[in-house]
Image (cartoon, rainbow, N blue to C red):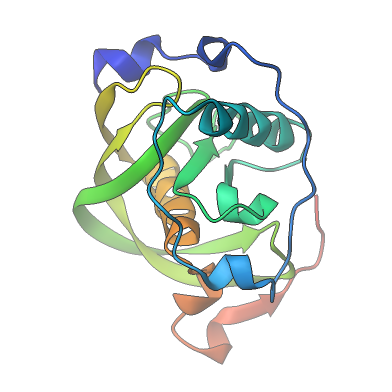
Length: 183
């Protein structure tokens, strides 16, 4: 992990986040490729704080991407701290312009999404992952290496920024399930 990510905390943003409404499919922003952002732009810094605030008040939420709050931008927040399938855990962080640079050890796993509240699905994702990105508020480049559930969460959020939902990654209708309980 880069030292910049280890030192980054949401307080670095210097603004209070607002809780935003989460959009659901078929909102067009969810199928649109997000634009790269300037991580030092005050609007991006505010968006980063808003994503953290919205993620924190959403039960069971381990990640939230800008398109899910109606913004077509390559920004997302992640925090898998409380999830039982977590191995490596970098705490709460926000990444801008994230891209996967290495992915390996592909495994299926069940996913859900606040933007698809009634369904879950089995998605094959890399369980070892290296991502490059930039931190909002500081503009520092990071190279994040992770695994297990945090790797899955990062790929799910990067997909949102690329205009994809987990439903675009399932093997077929047989791998989609009605959600029994929404947290």
